[in-house]
Image 1 (cartoon, rainbow, N blue to C red):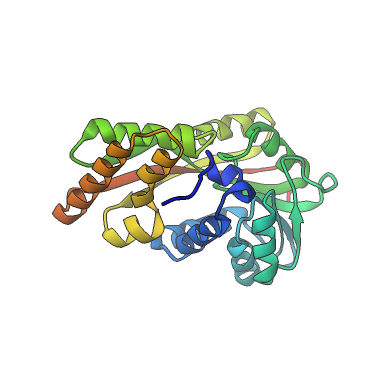
Image 2: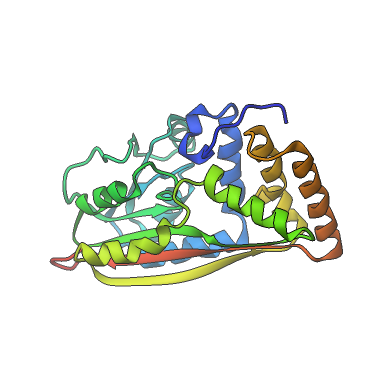
Length: 269
């Protein structure tokens, strides 16, 4: 590969040697059937109505913002820590974009709802980021948080020890807070939110197209080798076993996402 990679790439997008690769990765996921259905469910949980104002925390490429506005008639504000992603959103026509870290640059109770999709797993302090989401949403507004729980990952290749090692590196080198998703329902309940509900959705990958073009699984071992977390020989061995498993129909990867939704206490809409 020849590039110098940084740990937790989606936590440090602007420091990545090729941030466009991360932008393109998000665009590829947009058309994957699992994530098309996933985004629809997220919109349903937000219960957005025409004219309402909602906030996408960690909006990435802004695809979800545009889709929500088109589908519901609501107005969405996008914020992201990455200037690369904010520039991408503006180029794509997202109307309201803000550069923001865990402290959101908005007054209290100014949105009818807020969501964070595959974001809190990457931020430095996900608890603070969640508190900030609650701060800016009005009483009766909706909160939706979606993240994978990386401890639910399964990967089948012939060498099960190596598969477990790769999944372990996914948790330590790729994602900062891979099990935060399981804590969100309890945190929202402790904050007094109402109607706290959790839905699991499992992504299952077996086909070659998704392995190569969408999930980037083929790159995992090489990236870990570039980071110094994996021996080059092990990376090559993983790639060979991955090819063998795909060709023989033995390959499988899965991970479960948790959708947590809730309503802010106080007057309902």
